[in-house]
Length: 428
Image (cartoon, rainbow, N blue to C red; front, side, top):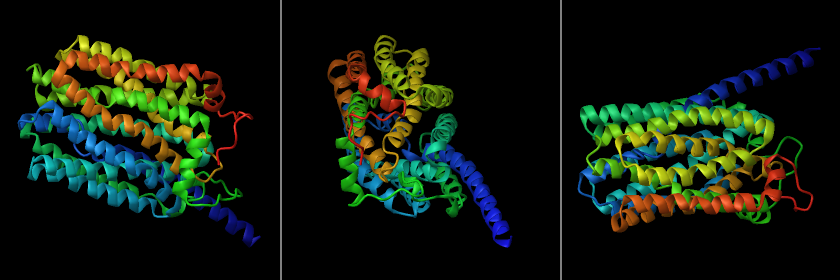
């Protein structure tokens, strides 16, 4: 009798820890939004004010993107193996804020490049860590709903952070934005420490429910094999690479285009571009969560890919202050849908393999290839051919995503609905 009572008490304790963990996860996603990428889209206008041209600005952003791309898969493998996932977020958060402050000390190309590389490396570890903790707390069955809520809070944090950054930059100057990032970083660290350690099941966090066996071999090597042997994941990664090749440069380049034409205050306009997009992302991430629960992820990804060509067409046609509304609403639709669909789809495809976070990192690596090249391509296109042509070309890259997604629809639809195709070999 005493044993049954103790078991019941233990179960109630785990449920309470899980509830606290989910609330802390949402707070973490809110505050880490302004911290994760340093000063993010404000970097371009900050450097432009100090005499940088669009080509070099895009190049240093690409350097950071390449560094982040190279470490995402190893970071995912590390997250799969470590039981110190909370500490990963603490350390990387501190490093991100410190790296951003380097730019205040010097705007030389080497200092800015080092700062962007350090920020990208730290940011590459935060994503898999938060996804792993989420999966460890709510398990596969609850991942779609909790990830949707996480992303809604993350977009809300981006929106609030960008609004405050715009106001602070306008009132006190651009350096005030760096100090706001530091405050958000401290609050993110506090939030992750509020997650009870025992609420995280580290086996479930890597895609192994209780009773499943572990695969042999190193997490990193197995991660790449999982990606290469799983056809839906290959198609997903390639489609995301095309999408981010066009999407990565669109936001900072549109801010540079409008501000450079003298049609907007640097801090306020850049803040507006972020606030509009993130407000839409809050809504679309919640919609994506509900649609995915009923119809799977295929349609969600299709709509997200279709948004970018239209966005590029509008951005190239309307370089005006008011153009931020249609351009960034479409950004919010594309990115908001993907923020829920991509982690959920990878977790679904690799469920039971024990390599979910390696898979997250591997897919992020391939899509990061596109995202890291985009600022350099967009920056030099704008410098050589003008902003309008650059936007048209960037938007056109997503046509490759649409071709892949529609061309392999018969393979992707069952996978995106969580149905295993028996003609496909197991993922692990």
